[in-house]
Length: 67
Image (cartoon, rainbow, N blue to C red; front, top):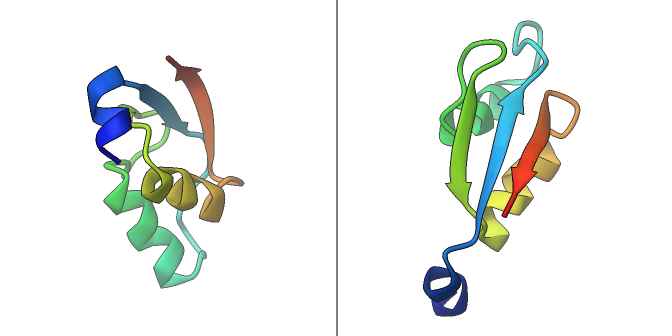
C-alpha cells in the first residue's frame, strides 16, 4: 500500500452504465467510487481496494486512463 502512495499511481474511471434497476450493493459501489451520474469521471488512487470495486461494477464503468 505504501508502495503505490510513493509512486503516485492513479486510475481514471468513467461511468458508462446506469445504476437504475441494479442491486443496491452495485449502486453503493458506484457512490464509493465517486460516480453517481452517467459519463462522470474520477481519478482515483490505484489500490487493490479500488481495483476490486471497479471489477465489481465493470459492466457499468470503463477505465479511461491508468498512469
